[in-house]
Length: 150
Image 1 (cartoon, rainbow, N blue to C red):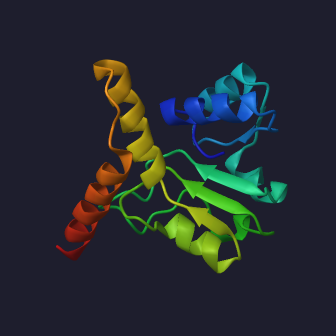
Image 2: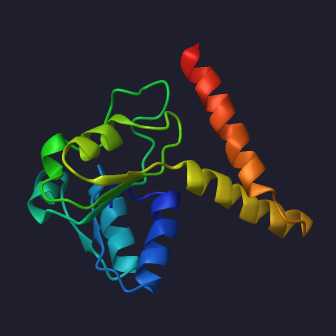
């Protein structure tokens, strides 16, 4: 996993619950080490991350988000084997991180689902009402496509 902020903590919680082996890298080692410790994971310095050849790579940073769409949190050579690349960034729908992963044979998952379903969960907690997730997902897609054309 790339990143050690709030989104990373949420993802770590879910992965830890499922018994995944966590390897965390972050630009500031202190935060990465702390998060790894909290979830029985291992911290990996960025320069050593590519040596892992992970099956699943999750970007939990905002690197690559609009308007900085040509940035990526890791070099392309990180995608050494095939696997899954998940980016929590939802704008653009396909980040440079995801394009590079796809070009190396990885299946890719954009952050749009996390964005919508996290909102749905919060909506339900605050109002007690069911969130129309599919309607909201379509609205987000429509809005982002319009924004990308500007």
